[in-house]
Amino acid sequence: MKLYYYDENGYYSAMSEAFLDPLETELQGKEVWLIPPHATTIEPPSSADGHIIKFNGKTWELEKMPDPEPEPELTLEELKAQKLKLVDAWTADKITGGFTSRCTGSPVRYDSDRDTQNTVSSDLNTIYLSPEKFNENFPNGYPMRGYPENANIKQVYFLTKEQLLQWNVDLGLHRGTCKQNGWIKQAEVNAAQSKEELDAIILD
Image (cartoon, rainbow, N blue to C red):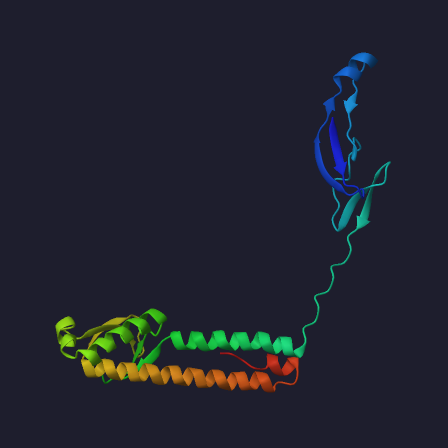
């Protein structure tokens, strides 16, 4: 025999197998099952799509699920705060998403992720402080991978000291341009007067 449990408000919660009451079964000469509080042997409906199953003390009823509470509508200032976070992330992605330099004489798209920036920055400090170590550490040139123009496979370029310095200048200009574009987007967000104006600010 199966038992069907419900909570203190009558709502269905679980099912389990029932156990015989050995003492009462022996005394009455028939099977007597242990039925705890908040349980019944009456089987609930097998399907309750869109409804909650509730026991009324005699039978199971289907109670329509309440409609979910609507999400509170954000104020314009809250929407602006959300958009500004997106602008910050967009700006950061632009900075670390690669840049083009002509330090070798032709346009090449190089990585500009944080690791690349930190590694080159450290090596440049060595160049400035101990120029002779550049040739000692990089006799064939400073290795840098990048995509040649109209190519999708990286190549390794061995940059001279002068080319590496120009690479760093181009990276700095790239970062500055990205930040300026981010500031422009921030100004557009702050100037927006409605949700529609915010939605019209596209982060390509």
